[in-house]
Length: 289
Ligand SMILES: Nc1ncnc2c1ncn2[C@@H]1O[C@H](COP(=O)(O)OP(=O)(O)OP(=O)(O)O)[C@@H](O)[C@H]1O
Ligand SMILES: [Mg+2]
Image (tube, rainbow, N blue to C red; front, side):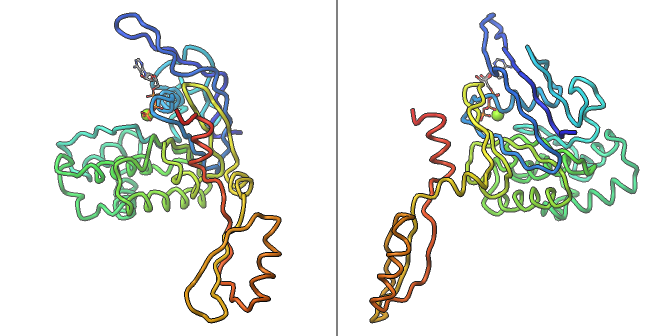
């Protein structure tokens, strides 16, 4: 059984003036249990619309979505899911502890479980010091962390996160990536949207690129890393052992370049691939315009 299935999903909004906005066109995707899947697309591509449809928060114009085999329109589909919305708005008169307590009750957790898991997530998200403070006094990054915490509270096996790194500093981004990798270790499926390509490269198994409501491509990230290699950069120290220099070589010439360096008594320090980054691939796919 797939963690998430999206079939021929389409969504057309009607604005108050009756104008049609086609946000999503015939999207089909299947995401396995234990898979980390990045959903990449520029602003307005339809990422949040897809996520809201998967979560059953809005109705599709066409197509279906299922979570662990259950149609998203059914309430039970959301039982084993953690959800982080875009721009989370939390009840800011509550403290972090009270907020997690409320979320725990809504998802049917017992008192002890709520206490244990609140301790865990607040510690992991580095919010223990602020647990007794009202959320209205939180910084943007702290709100984002707490919102992620509520998604993790009941230890769901599927996580749907709309831009989880948004508004976070470099330490916060690194922390969220670590948490995503820990979830993978536990066998969870994480589906997250972003428009930042480096977030995807380091944590995802697969990535889909969406543009103007249409799925452009789905990549296996490991393939993307290998396919994109178009040369190598060799760092070396010359025979006089003065400064470090570097030279670039095509894959075909690499052996010859290394042999030339060795024969002139240079010490080879580093050989690294020069590859097309996901960012370049992304720009090629969605068009530099
Ligand atoms: N409720 C709505 N009414 C009308 N149009 C909408 C509505 N929600 C979204 N749209 C439109 O659908 C398109 C896709 O929006 P969506 O929020 O899914 O994009 P996104 O990929 O999440 O973008 P971002 O990276 O900016 O968050 C946009 O053109 C947007 O204006
Ligand atoms: Mg969005």
